[in-house]
Image (cartoon, rainbow, N blue to C red; front, side):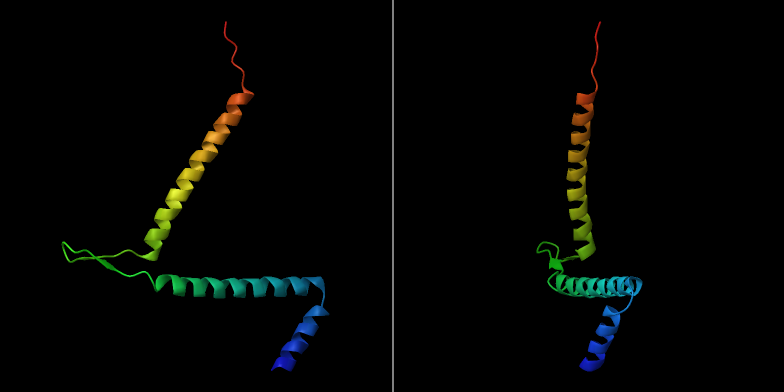
Length: 99
């Protein structure tokens, strides 16, 4: 098995640049899928349903709800900073002439 893998790697090394790029993209995609799958598996395992003491009803908080809330928080503050930066830059570009 390892010899055939080594032969395949040697074959890729000796091939043209287009083939090398195809293998690079393919292996990058495979690696990222594996990384994201492992990340989601280990991230979802500690997220549990929280039971409220007063009502005894389980509060369902999923990963995607938390992710969406965090994205809104970060995106909103980043967007506001970007708008402030743009307004500050544009404000310095224009000169008002008063009579």
